Image (cartoon, rainbow, N blue to C red; front, side):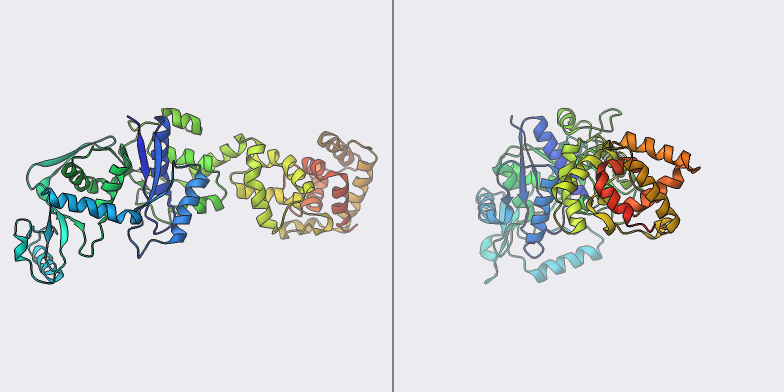
Length: 468
């Protein structure tokens, strides 16, 4: 059997973090088995489905590295096929026309509510002769669901789950205007592309019982269901925006690497022993449904941030640069010239060791994008901009120049340390004014590294900007 999974979001908003994890689990399972991962946009809710939401979903999946196989399927475009199946069920006796008017249904619901009973269609047209239909009423098509016995799902995550058929009513398959319902469309779409495993959130478990009845009525192959527990916040409550229930694009903007986010989402509800840092290749090799837990997982932004810091340190500079350079250009509002790119490339390794996000990396590398006197001095650093320090730095520069052509980090550090000793100063009394002159801040990468990367000419230009 060739494994076929699918991710089927509704385009009514951004790709949220729970949806991203569902997509990841489907992607990993299909890749683990050498199968197919499909993407279907369930856009049947025409009032709420939007093109920007579709674009956000596609962009979010692409950024996460979860590439789907084949073309994207749009559910609304398959409405004729869904209606065809409803009519087939009608013809084979597994569905029927219901002519109940909206007023009748409202009256029925009011009576059930008054009696304290569940809101269920009472089957009033289930066995009636269509000849009794009132004139001018367009009927809906309802499933003729079994009324006795049980529907059983052997779920790959939840285990065996059972519901009494008496609790399930005859749901609508085709509305009076001829449009299919979500329940019908999902089943038809999954069957027509041969989905073998339906991996989704456990908030869809109740839907599975109803969908399985359609599958059985049509005599189709039953997929293997795997309903994953939802993600909660650190406090155990349902995940909300205050916990971090944002769109995937927001995590990109906050400076998280896609590989780190994939790793973190993988560990929300799935485990492989004590392993925490799991590469994508390892994830594909190890992933299975047996290790998906039944309890809700808790989203913790601090843990994600710590994991991202590990990925920043371990990612080769050549792989990290394509993430960094566009962010730098966005921050300065222009293109980086070759000189700046060379500085950034040299400075990246040192900066990434002390950063937790790409935003922090960019904030630290911004010093390499400036030229000479253009470096602004922040408020905390302003106290170091004095005539006394300017004179000291001028003297230091003369000493550095006397060293000749060698402008390596090691040589620069040796010269600055000798200079401090020779002038009765602590290293910090030299290094901090030097840092402010070169970067405009009291915080930066190691100052000797900064000097070496900026080069002799640029370093001199910045020192000249300090009063002396």
